[in-house]
Image (cartoon, rainbow, N blue to C red; front, side, top):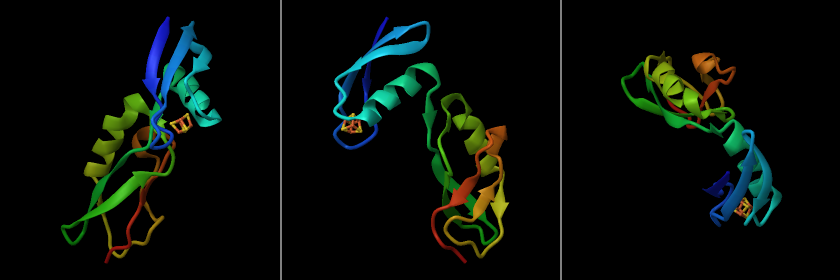
Length: 116
Ligand code: SF4
């Protein structure tokens, strides 16, 4: 099976052609660098994404957050739900943990802007 992907590793957006066998990438073309090859391999076997959203603070205002690392794509909704059901106590600083082990992914959600 062949899959066509756009690499999201940088703004160049290289168009990748991936030959897939048994759920794994056996060849990748169209990539300009190694990041594209790695992205293609992950995307066809176990796709992941960073999640960016906002969490409510105890002053009633939203604070921007993101996952510390990428999470499995099928867990994105669960991660967002976990964040949306959380209220954090101010003040917070960049890098503080807003939600620990979000949706049992093993990945924390961290604050990306100082607040409070
Ligand atoms: S393959 Fe490399 S150069 Fe092309 S979009 Fe991906 S990261 Fe950028």
